[in-house]
Picture (spheres, rainbow, N blue to C red):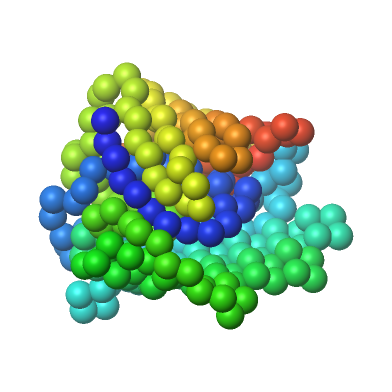
Amino acid sequence: MNRATLSGGAWPAVLLLLLGFPAGLLAQAGSSSWPPVASGEKLRFNLLWPSGFSLGEAVLEASGTGEQIQLQATVQADLPQHPIEYSFSSSADEQLCSLRYRETLREGNNTRETSYEFDQENHKVRRTEGGQSSESSIPECARDPLALLYHFRRQISFHQLPIGTPEAVGAFYLGGEYTTRYEAITPETVQLGTKEWAGDRFLIRVEGPGGDRGFEVWIRPDTARTPVAVRILFPLAIFSAELE
């Protein structure tokens, strides 16, 4: 069993399209030589309606600055009479243990901003929203969603996750405890929209306070372990995202 913990606030449905990841092992090596951090990366994803038409775009960015790793994600979607703009930023150390995390969620005329300050040494995190702050305990090397996503990619890049096993189970904290079950499948090609993508397919199920949700992620077997396609089932339809 692999176990990792993160603290976070909202988990928007659109973000699930890109942050479909299992919890991983604690890092055994720094990230400074890993390409997405050493050279930086900027990944653009096209968010798709079930019909294959675009509903918006999401961008993932990473860079290394000294002893810190900077991660960012933005999501823009034009839903009928309900435009969405999400932005997320994370600062983490070389082990991808979180230092700071901030999210701004705009849905229609509503905006919510939440920030987190991590005190890894004393195992505490301070959450601030609407001028109100609260503090809670965290485990060793707690990770926010962006830090955990890149941690997972780095782990399978360095072959530190048991990908060959039929199933693995992890748990993380995101305003409540979630259990993540994932199964690595043999390489597969999938078509989303008008494009075909080849990669290692992961079946992932998240169980937690908001109910259960399952989705599929295809990850390219390159050094960076780049996610190229995601497909998630909602009650009304199947939505997806593909690398541009």
